Image 1 (cartoon, protein in one colour):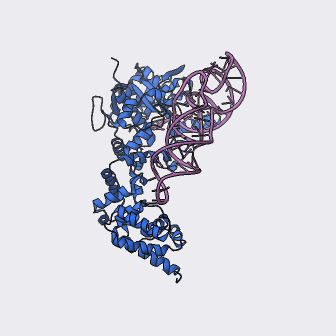
Image 2 (cartoon, rainbow, N blue to C red):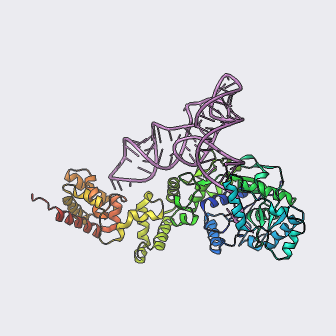
Image 3 (cartoon, rainbow, N blue to C red):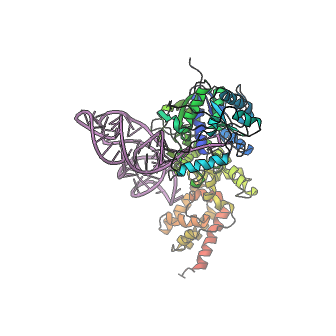
Length: 493
RNA sequence: GGCGCUAUCGUCUAGGGGUCAGGACGGGUGGUUCUCAGCCAUCAAACCGGGGUUCGAAUCCCCGUAGCGCUACCA
């Protein structure tokens, strides 16, 4: 039996959970589950300026919503805590101290502004903007003396010569010349570790076996490998998954549309949709099958099916997929979701939501047209108004139809006596009227649709009548006829 | 600028020396039908370029080109 798999998702709480981060979390989760391993959540809050408690909470919330339960981490504990880097400062200090003692790190007294200026100067000269090792060359004793004087300093890792390569789980062999790696700061002046150092220390101490992360970390990997080695540790397996891009091929950001998991949730996307869709961004099972539940993904997910190419986030496909999932939900559940949306947005007065049985019927009538709860009202608004205010385009269609008002009146008359007031009798009456009039059923139905709902696109007309009820249906048909005749009086016959 | 990664329909992708280069989203057309949605059928749509290797290359190698990423006391 080999070493049990331990992976982690290590977000920095500097904003909401981005779909890219969610996808990374998902892949880690799936990898752990697939191999019967452990999925750790670690909060990388070493940047004091940008980390916030709200972001941390938002990340938990988004992950829970997606169903990505972590086995170890905040809230659930574990033997390798604490799981907030901000609570592990003494640990980093200890290992940094050891690097310093053994000559693998050195104190740097350069101040950040100078460094920035030097870096920019190097850039304009067309040179690689590396740290020039000023402080590495400090005469023996001077470093200690400056510390004794109370001068602030950072700790830099001394990058060895040579080259560094590893076998990436997604990309295969990757190599970097150490010369381009720079002597990175591992401990800031404020004694907080930087990412590359904290990640190494934690991944080792937490016995992480596989690091699955975004492509954007590729160039951090050789640096981290060198730190592992300087500490005498064995690096984990690395695998870099491609990034998620916007339609223009650049890193997905707000200007491409929604990016936060929570926003998608608020827009009515289901967690099963997000999970399934995100899984397909950079991973494929066989190129044919693409509907997967989380459980099925746990079974199916393997690293060798992860793509090397960045993926563009396709909002249309997301919408389609949500329709697939939404439609498959039981009617009661769909109604709950619609209700929840209506409530939270206050799109309708609370009184309109009191009759659940009615809402169930309305949701049923709207049917497949609704791919997200927020689309319900587009097909159902007519139910919640006293008098329809027709779309101009719909009304002009109606007004252009000769004989429409007369047929609306006749239909109203017919509806008054239909008994029982049910779908099939309504259909029979309507079609009967069309036959009597010598026109196609559509010539009666379309005008009725516009008169009843004010729109050209609605649920089935007999469902509309049922939902509206006899009295309101009749009134709306006559009302529309009145309005039509007022606008252009029917010629006397 | 340097370094790295990547390259199959518009998009997500399958395939990986010999295939009609497959599927999905989106789009077109036809059908069902009271509109739309849905469903069914159907069509269009791709191997970045150039050199090799080979009987044969989308597939292997090299070189370009392009895109993206990284180049912080951010992560």
